[in-house]
Amino acid sequence: MGMANTKFPRRGLPWTLAELKQLGHRPDPELARRLGRPIKEVVAMRESRRMRLVTPVCCSSISVGYEGKQLLTGQF
Image (cartoon, rainbow, N blue to C red; front, side):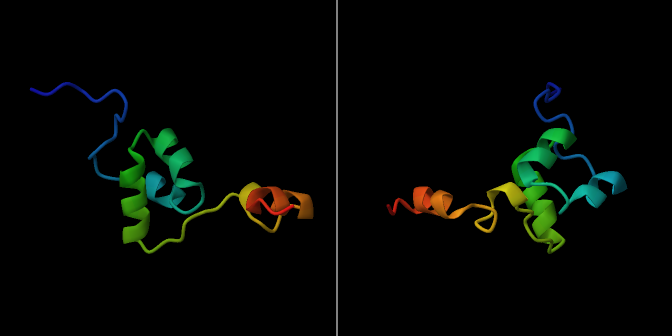
C-alpha cells in the first residue's frame, strides 16, 4: 500500500462544501496551504467553476504610488 501524503493530506479527496465556499475568496496559494491541497488542484477546481482569480489589494497597480510604478517598470 502507498504511504500517506503528509505534504498534501487532502490531495485527491472529494471537496467538502466548506472548502468549495472558500474558492474565490482567498488567493490560490494561501487557500491551498490552508486546505492541505496542491495549488494545481485548487486552481483546477476554481477554473472548473469559472471563478475569477483573487488578487490581493496590496499588489494591484491601483494601490501603488507614482514612485512605486517607476520602480516596477524600471523607468526613472
